[in-house]
Image 1 (cartoon, rainbow, N blue to C red):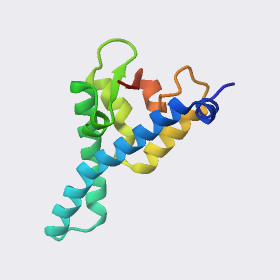
Image 2: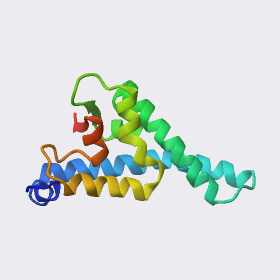
Image 3: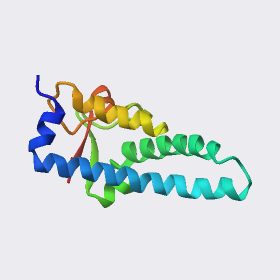
Image 4: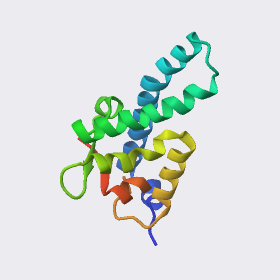
Length: 138
């Protein structure tokens, strides 16, 4: 069985792909989490609640941008594009592939499972496989 980790260990282009995806999610997280945290701090709310709220916003933001323009601002800055492997990207596919973004440990688990299973496309995280989507450098 060949896994995504096998490809990743020897394919420099794939390493660059995953580095771009990581930087893109950091950018997107900052776009959502920083203003949310500041706003909740200014109104005196607990530091924990904004993280759950912002995770939901990140999920909605990523789903909307993936389905409408093929990627978030972070992905666009890094020349990445989210595509459907079965035709035109639907909102259902975007929701499915982004659900793990609600909580950071779920996203990490999504990446690890995606790379650990036998794969035909090592650019896919597990939820990409389930949603029939992938992320491409363009």
